[in-house]
Image (cartoon, rainbow, N blue to C red):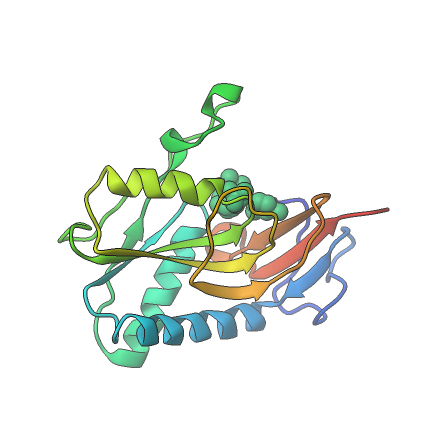
Amino acid sequence: MDSRALSRPDGPPGGGTTDDRPGKQVLSGADIARVIDRIAHQILEKTRGGANTVLLGIPSRGVPLARRLAERISAFEGFAMPHGSLDVTLYRDDLRRGGTRPLGPTDVPDGGVDDRRVVLVDDVLYSGRTVRAALNALYDLGRPSQVQLAVLVDRGHRELPIRADYVGKNLPTSTTESVAVHLSEVDGVDAVILTGGAS
Ligand SMILES: O=P(O)(O)OC[C@H]1O[C@H](OP(=O)(O)OP(=O)(O)O)[C@H](O)[C@@H]1O
Ligand SMILES: O=c1cc[nH]c(=O)[nH]1
């Protein structure tokens, strides 16, 4: 994510942030909670009640999102939804372009990924390069029966033939804008902020 703007979770809906920094709040904390509930229901519908399914979040913010989805699915259906994390750092296509990135956690639930449906979870879908890296990382762990993708925000501008199965919010953006997802587990607040664009 891009962290150039911050806002408290329940700022003015649809516009303005609750502090002085630039950016437009496109999802409040309450909006994010509703979106997670919706995606949790959609996952249940498209996975025959979550059968043989594992949620794997892509660090950083995909991990708490996967955990929240699993918690909501467990609350709705009364079973423990397996969830974990999948680091993609070593599979990124920009590794040789310099800069260092800390490794994130890979934590696969008991039973692994072989012959199971894996739902990858991330906060933002943009070029699709992170998801490409996640697919390579995943297939080094095993052979899932199916892979699906859930994202909180799809901002367009794909550079690879990748699409999400579950989208919290489709957000048309320009390439000069940035989408910053803030989650309480990482950032202390829940909000999605759009920054940048033509000045
Ligand atoms: O579709 P893409 O063009 O790959 O962009 C989307 C990715 O960019 C952000 O991650 P980032 O690499 O900024 O790391 P972070 O999750 O640690 O913030 C975001 O969390 C997605 O994973
Ligand atoms: O705007 C963007 C683009 C990629 N990743 C993000 O988190 N935000």
